[in-house]
Image (cartoon, rainbow, N blue to C red; front, side, top):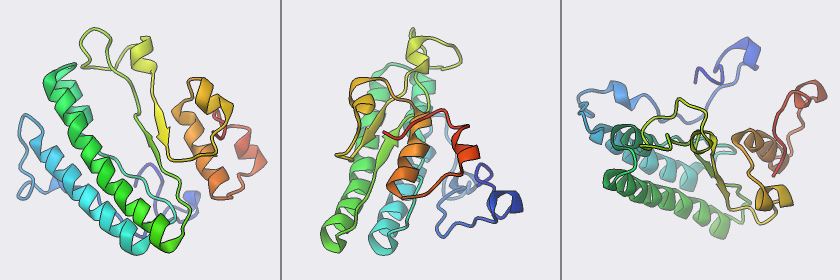
Length: 187
């Protein structure tokens, strides 16, 4: 919420309709453990709440952050534990996708889904990401859009391309002064 500036006049007094955040502060329901199982449990709750919210409310724009895979990568690097965390994440994303697919099929809505990571991993261990190696700087983007351009299909696009892609999809005009400052392009 701080990133967007909810309620700040400088951010246009934006407010959110649905928020599923801050569960890590609930030490009763989610007691912290050294293997981040509590983060997995929080991700499960966020997935459940996101899925229900999409099915029943269909918000115009959603941002979902699932943290467990990142935590496990930091703890175990390239490992069986990390591979298993990806399997868990795949299931969670699949559940969210089913809710989106429900909206598409039964409400004839047009949905854009973008899935990404915010960083790569250390090339030696897969644990950290504080350097400038190709693996650490490489991110990926997946989308359900069937209307991607050659840049998306043939080159290494970056997370800077997500905002312009969303604004184009939603027919939001970015003021030219701001658009000139964007590093990315619509995919």
